[in-house]
Amino acid sequence: MLPRVPLAIAAGAALGYLYYRVIGCRSGVCPITSSPYVSSLYGAVMGYLLSGGLQGS
Image (tube, rainbow, N blue to C red; front, side):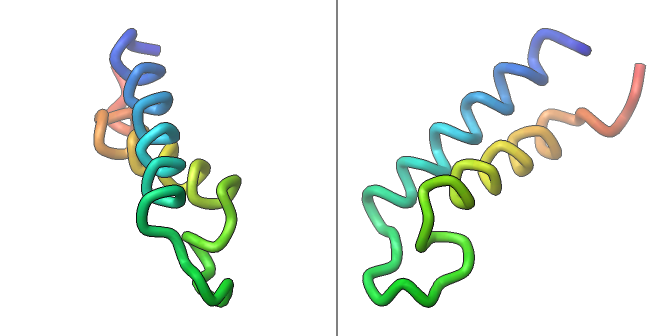
């Protein structure tokens, strides 16, 4: 794995959690932002995809 991929995953997870804390979902019916775990996982996946992790070597 390239060094940028783990950094992008960690940054995405942190941004996902930050999104949950700052914006979140007050009613609890939002599938992504109602849980800090799901929001962080979603951010990590997005960080992985945006880093080019699927391109291979």
